[in-house]
Image 1: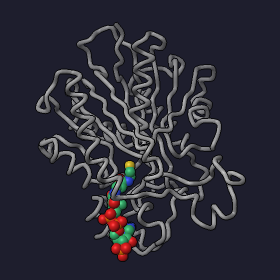
Image 2: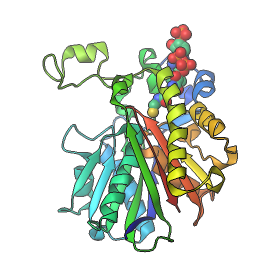
Image 3: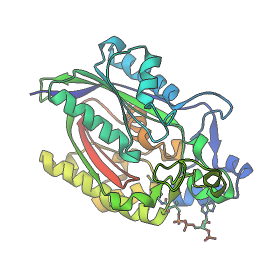
Image 4: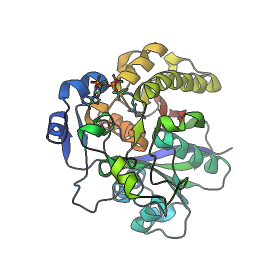
Length: 335
Ligand code: COA
């Protein structure tokens, strides 16, 4: 039997910080409104005049992960990048990252599963490792939201929520079931809710060309969200996903040392913790500082928890995410 072990982790956040009050220069909002409803105090956004792309953020996180793993880039067998904000519509951001890393030839795969993207990505890596196909896989979650947000009052319900950032892990094969490893991943989706949180355009579903002046004029190029629906479903699905992981592994909630949930809204995570009945000190949140970085929230959270000493070797870590699609899932990791 093969298992996958996370042996390295890295992350990167753009330098420029936008506090809630800074957003008032762009839109009609307030620190009080944002903090009360979401717990967000600030977010990192790339310099909008720079040419920094999602693959650049991914590269910085990936280099950090490889260094901390002591794995040379030439040893990698596969690159998986989860993102909803690719450098370009095609080819995938994993290809741009692969070129920047300088490891041509190995497969490079994009995962477009939104806020659950990182869990889908490590699950894919885990399956390739378990079957013995690959031994060393780089998995990255990276987003640049700031270039795609409507930063006017009209788009404020969405634009205050999102930040830019990247996180990466290196996963390697191990034969030892008792070593630190990914114990399980569970993935779900319900496409009936696809339009509860989505970007209408560019669209190959017509009518007409995939991008039109009307798309731009009407704001169809910006994300649309039914915030209340997202909130309600997230608060239900994330506890379900955690319980599914526990049942599959024969653990109970008290066995978990640390919960690192997706960071969409602090109020959602508070509700998830309440429903599960888990103590606050076991939940590690970063949303106040990083906002929602979609596919990057979980690796960013794991890395930050490690950095501040909340995550230690041997700990049992439960992660869960919910997002657009709707998609949701969990991963249980012996760190
Ligand atoms: N600043 C100030 N006011 C704002 C605002 C902002 N950034 N965004 C919206 N408002 C206003 C609205 O215009 C509305 O005003 P009105 O009552 O005069 O019409 C009012 O605040 C309430 O808006 P509403 O959308 O009902 O707020 P809410 O209590 O549902 O909270 C969210 C909105 C987005 C915070 C909440 O629904 C949420 O967090 N949902 C989940 C979102 C999520 O997780 N998304 C990512 C998915 S992975």
